[in-house]
Image 1 (cartoon, rainbow, N blue to C red):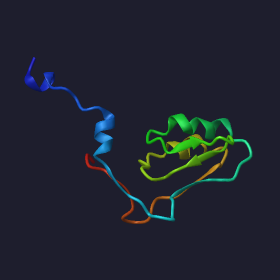
Image 2 (cartoon, rainbow, N blue to C red):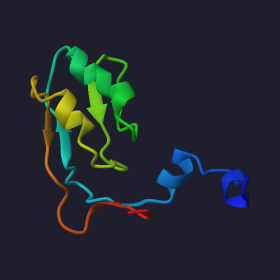
Image 3 (cartoon, rainbow, N blue to C red):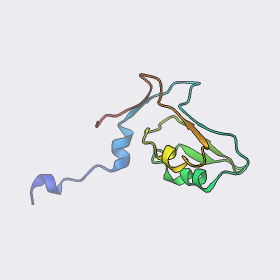
Length: 101
């Protein structure tokens, strides 16, 4: 085997750590709409979001912290039928800045 094939590969987490995020303070591009009980789709985002932006509070609500969002669109697809999130692209110059394309 060649040296290139034997070289250790970087983990996804290590590559994602190299990305940079320019936070648009006070203007998040994702908002969770007010809800009494989150739907199964919204609850799923607490485990499906690759950036870990969604969390469940002690009161059972699901919240989003858009800082670090990869803008992958997973939450848009998973919650499209329930309409529980409001998603817009970040303003120009803000959001994720990918190092590896």
